[in-house]
Length: 266
Image 1 (cartoon, rainbow, N blue to C red):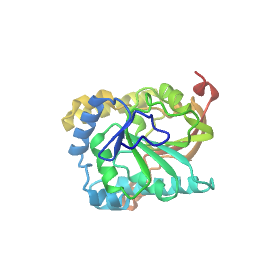
Image 2 (image 1 turned 180 degrees about the horizontal axis):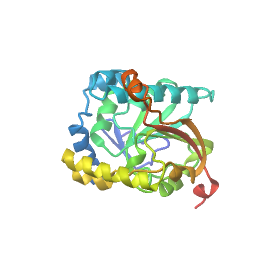
Image 3 (image 1 turned 135 degrees about the horizontal axis):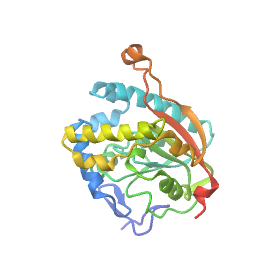
Image 4 (image 1 turned 90 degrees about the horizontal axis):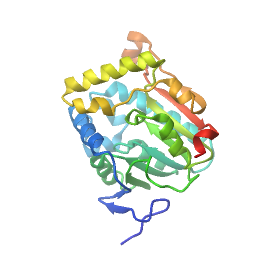
């Protein structure tokens, strides 16, 4: 048996290309999969391999145009650092972004709680040097100061407590490292956040997956601003009808966070 690669826990077990690092929230994984199926986001291997460009041929084409721009921006920012980076991609889904970052020479560990998409990623991107992991970043014991970059791309909404989350992952962030929050909707104030939560609950009930309502968490921008020095790399943009036609509307934030020292200190 081949031992777990650094920096994974030594007792990790690899099955179907995925390293199992400990328990995950099974309720979240089950509800998430049901939502993905109903939203037609479970893609064939061919589509996954070609993302984000192949997403232009799906019913979510407008979103994939935005995410293609996000990936381009992130790659440019990381390239400017001038060295291969140690990256942890939390909530990697089917692995398209992790695989793209690995092409740039970075060492990428991709983590998710959804086993089906992880196994698909391990198969589809078997030629990429990505370590695919099933686990919860709040409980997996990585070495301290291990990663130059931690990425949350369209995944922050699956964590209820950002202060606790950043407290935990900041311990494994190297000095000078950044947490990149990408492709994430953040609201202006608590009232807008509560309204978004109510809309989400109604949406998931209508979709037939009411269990997802309490597992999907709207967050306000101020929730992140409190946690560290934040560089705003992209803000939401609404150009109305022109933006819808051209695909230039963008509902997402892209932030780079350097956590405050008190977030790191136990």
